[in-house]
Length: 252
Image (cartoon, rainbow, N blue to C red; front, side, top):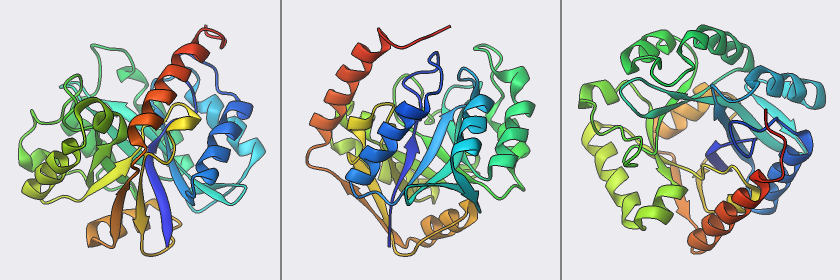
């Protein structure tokens, strides 16, 4: 069995520098909340994305598609903005992500994001897991895409921030949208701050070591989504703490 959060961040915000100390606080809280794995889906256009990987490479052992952080599997990934609005999570091997990050460099500024179909073409044959992040969030929805376009994804994201903002019915709305398309719906906390861990997570029936194995488990339906009764408190506390910390952390 694997308790897995598929949408997390290792930095407080895009503009803050990556800190191993802050990341350690994140992973310690994940472990405290009984998670056995997370996907580190940092924004592709965050400040010094590759520096984050460099620091993680120097600090932790890496095997298959994850870092081993005190027994917590940290799968590598990124969150990519697309031109027509929406965010796509790409989870895969760190070497592939370094290469993908370089290919996406021309698309890193707002107004120049890569079109959805081009991102799908670019990652089509790669051993990755592609998740449509917060698909019904008003600021960055995926509902404007045709079903045949969204079917190129592997899953849709039941996002803790959206459950807090729009209410618990949002989980059923995402599940319904996913079912209409023919996709699984999986949970991601969207944590930028440690207190948000444990708000939502997935329980997989078996341990996975690669993005391909994660994709197979989701598509087979061998998992369940868990939503904490404390979700609202966790997300609200995390958001309040995030705003306080942003005033003290170094930015460029």
